[in-house]
Length: 333
Image (tube, rainbow, N blue to C red; front, side, top):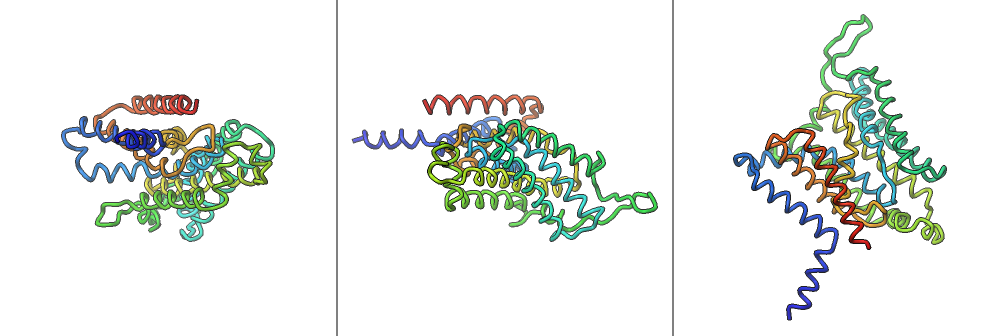
């Protein structure tokens, strides 16, 4: 009598969602044990974790789409930095209103992603090489635009003297909280990105093409899937998400820093892999990526609460990626 039930349970435990949830549950148990004198049980800790992890999560949404095509995007952290610098430059020294600055930055991020996609799809260059080059290029461009310095509301006028200008309202709006101060706007932006990515992957023809290309590119081509266009759109979406993350990052830091976001691509990849999306492409979903985002977010928060050094967080993140990939490879055999 228990046979069919046990079989269904084992089948469910073998799903990516179940494994991702188990990893998240493990993090929550660890948080309860190492609770920093009860700090882990305060809602403010979880609220702040969601705010801190939201920028990474936005990057992870775009990374999920690219990895599903069996690609990788190492440039997201640099595109984020360029977008943060661009947004600060347009709204502070240039004085552009947000309704113009935001679309301009989104177009820049999407364009950079599209260039990466075209190089991968049309020139047949390995995604690792293309996005590594784009990572260096975008970071360099961010330094050129900013003059190698942070862009703040201290603006140098025609007389050569720095003047303090009012901070645009959009910065405070993006970094504000709603629902009685319990939910950050940037967290809502992250959830909106998750929803948009889910619609693309689960409800649109583009999503089916992305899975097909990642599963078997040659078979997809023979089946009539526009492989090149699909790859270009996938990388463009990653660039778009990086631009959104850059705007949020600038608002949170109240400045445009050309050095911001370094290493963020590692966290985004870790979140996608922990969520069960295969680095070989064709398998995964943004739903499990959301769980991966929470898992890494709680890991970082627990380490922070217990005063673990930054080096420990980096080493654990790297180890988690390796373990997750080894687990996927063993499962697929």
